[in-house]
Length: 76
Image (cartoon, rainbow, N blue to C red; front, top):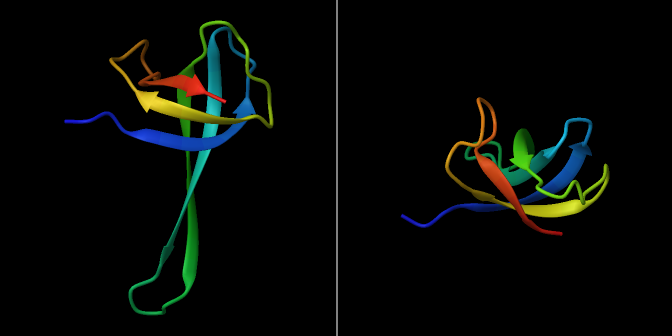
């Protein structure tokens, strides 16, 4: 099964080697036919602490790094 790749914005870089990424998805409501925005935060591993708040990054699924980290930063 291929690993998922998501794109989002860094909302926090306070922790060492970790960034919090906000990923937003848009879809059309099946009944109302209105575009809906849903967002979710993912904690991703950032080995070199290279990314700061506001950066747009791509993250990829990986084996668990810690209790909450299941993603790695792929690139900016």
